[in-house]
Amino acid sequence: MKEVRLRVGALSAVVEDSLQFCYEIATEGTALKGSVLVVKILPVVMHCPRCDADVELDSLQSFRCPRCGDLVGDLRQGRELEIESFEIDGAEEAVKQ
Amino acid sequence: MTTRIVELRRGILKKNDELAAGLRARFTTAGVLVLNMVSSPGTGKTAFLERTLRDLRQSGARVAALVGDLETDNDARRLAASGAPVRQINTHGICHLEAEMVGKHLEGWELAGLDYLFIENVGNLVCPSSYDLGEKIRVALLSVTEGEDKPLKYPTLFNSADAAVITKMDIAEAVGFDRETALKNINEIRPGIKVFETSAKTGTGMGEWLAYLAEARAVRI
Image (cartoon, rainbow over all chains, first blue to last red; front, side, top):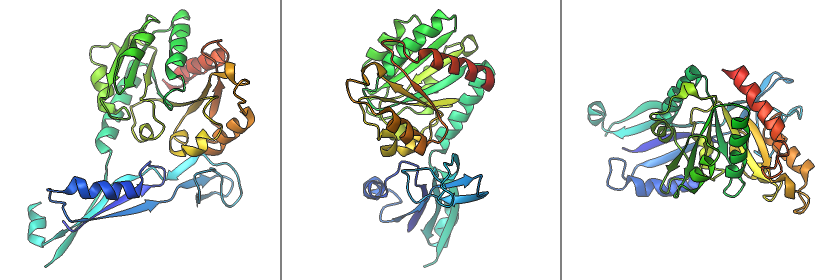
């Protein structure tokens, strides 16, 4: 296993540094040992009814549309916590998996 | 050496989400309104629930509670004094409840014989936000002693809540609680959320809270 890619929403309560720190320890002695963990942080995206658009928040301190300043409650992205893909060395091994 | 990329797109908490969806379906079929109560340690979740269970039972409602803690069954014993069926979930070090623990502790309970089921989560404002327990309503609680900026410090939890409860309103003045700021901060993180200002000790705000529960039960089931 060469690489594991995660998609992590900014509202998923995951701290990338902690995840990276644990990953090395948790993968010791497993098929994942030595693989790289790539964490893609997804920003919070809310739907703004006034602007009729999906807008990205730049901070979690205020759920307001960055365009019009309205408070927004309709979350469209930000709670993801998923394995997007992984990369394996050697095609033959991959088939066996 | 060739390499191969395998697309997975699999939720890491998929198993919990599936179990929670199963629980939610069971709760809906049984007609029981389930609430997941989340706060820091010391907010007064147990005192607030003691009062809620007692008041609901007095009004003739059929209520039960599951209560999560790392260790001890102290909270279950406190809540059971209301006369309601209560079970303790000891997580032994885990900082949140998971759907599997809830499912396991429901065994033998006739859910159709209940109007309300309260799940008191482990005192923690971080991890419980990621674990769906199959509840209809997630309630975030904060006390007047905790600081008005709590919602700003824990946006992941407050943003996932369906209702907020402020506890210990009876000592608000003594601790210099800034009500306006607290309400503003809750609204900045979870716009439009219903907020209840309560005291389990004096009963302040309980009427409004109980009316909300009754309405939520009627509407959502």
